[in-house]
Length: 160
Image (cartoon, rainbow, N blue to C red; front, side, top):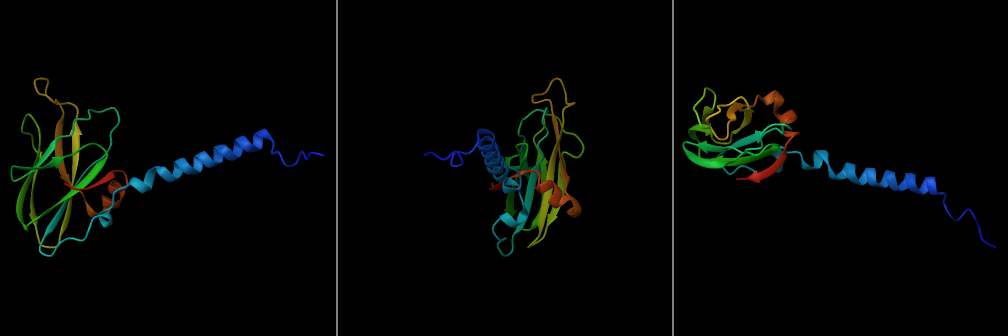
């Protein structure tokens, strides 16, 4: 004699499979990849850390402009990412790759020992027609009250 109760009904099996897939997908996306300053190793004694972050803006150019510190390349800033670089304390001029110089495309920052600073890369698609890439990128300091919000939207890349 066979038991019908031992074979689950098709709708119940499908529902269980869908719920399992949804749980797995939810666990793979979102906050697990979000950046946070706490993910980085501790800051070395006598050093200063600068974070560079750029939000993902779908529908805009994906050119990753190079960031410079006192004219030396630091790293390129891809959309939806955050990375950091440790520096010796002092005054630095951070600038970003552009084909034309515009206001707010650089920031002068005084870095003290043990401090952490965050600069956000923002881009304007209304650049110049005779430039490549035509976007204009800006560096802006991140206010402390918005830091957690902005870091929660980008992927942590580590040190560059």
